[in-house]
Image 1 (tube, rainbow, N blue to C red):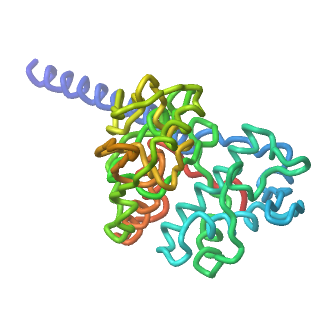
Image 2 (image 1 turned 180 degrees about the vertical axis):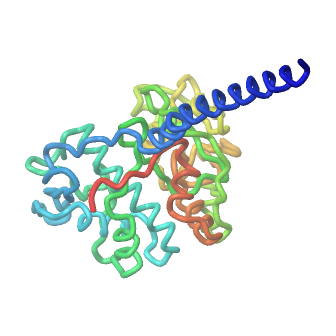
Amino acid sequence: MLKFRKISILFFVMILIVALIGCRAAERPEDDQTPDQAEEGEQPPIPDEITRGEGEEPVLKVYIHETGEIREMSIEEYLIPVVAGEMTNDWPEEALAAQAILARTFVMEFITDKGGSKYEGAHVSTDIEEAQAWSEEEVNDLVTQAVETTRGQVMVYEGQYVKSWFHAHAGMQTATAQEGLGFEAEEPPYIQVIESPDSQEAPEDDANWTETFTKAEIIAAAQESGQEPGDFTAIEVAETGPSGRATQLQIGEATVAAPAFRIALDSTRMKSTKLESVQVEGDQVTMSGTGYGHGVGMSQWGAYQMAQDGSSAEDIVNHYFKDVQIMKLWE
C-alpha cells in the first residue's frame, strides 16, 4: 500500500512538472517579442516633397541665402556645410556626429512641420534666421566623416521627428523648452533638465559672462513685447523655471518674458537667462550669468566634453534627449 502511494505521488509530481514547463515554453516567445517591438518603434514618413522612395536618400531644393540661387542637392550633401557652420570643425568626431544627427533631424522635422521654406520654390534655406547655419568654407574631412558615419540617422520619439534643439553652453544644467525658449505648446516629453558636463575648455565669457547695457536699450527691448516699463531703478527676476533660469523679468512697470526679452535685447550679449545678478546704476544696467544660449536640448560644449571622455554620438544624443530612438531612414 505504501509502495502504491509513493508511485502515485511520484506520478502526480511528474505531471505537474511537465505542465509547468509547457506553460513557460508557451509564454517565452511572447515575452521575447515585446522588447524587440518596443526597440523598433514606428518610423516617421519622409515628407512627400523630398522623397525618392522608401529607403532612398531624399533630395532638397536649398535656397542659398548668400547668392539668392536655389540649388538642388541630396540631404547628406546639404548637411555637411550645416555641421561645419554649427560646430567648430576640429572638435572630436563623435561630437560632430551627434551634431549631424541633430541637423538631419532638424531638416526632416522642419519640412514635415512647415512644408518648406519661406523662400518660394525651396524646401529649406541657408538663412540662419529660418533654419540652420551653413558654411562651405569650414568643411573639412572631420566634418564630412561625421556626416557619413551617421548617414540616414535621425532622432524619433513615438513615430515623430524630435525637435532637435541645441545651444552652445548649458551653464552646467539644461532647461525645459517652455523655460528656455518660451515654447508655448505642451512641453516635449523628451526634453529634460539634466546636468551638462560643459567643458572647462569653453571660453570663459561663455561659461560666465557679464555685459552692460544702457537703460534705453533695456526699454527698447521691453517695448518689443508691447510693454512700457517707464523709468526704472531695478530689474527683478519675477519667476524662474526648473533649472533656475529667469522666465519673467520685472522692469519698472513692465513684466516681460525673459526668453523673448533676451532675443530682443541681443542674445549674443545677454548670453542666457541663467542670471546671477542684475545691477542698475544710473543709466547703466549690468547683467551677469552663466552659459550661452537658450539651454534647451544638447549643449555643444557638453557634447565636446562627452566625446573627449569617450562617449559615442549615440551616448551624447541619449544623454540630452530622453527616451528617443535613433533610426536609420536610408542607406
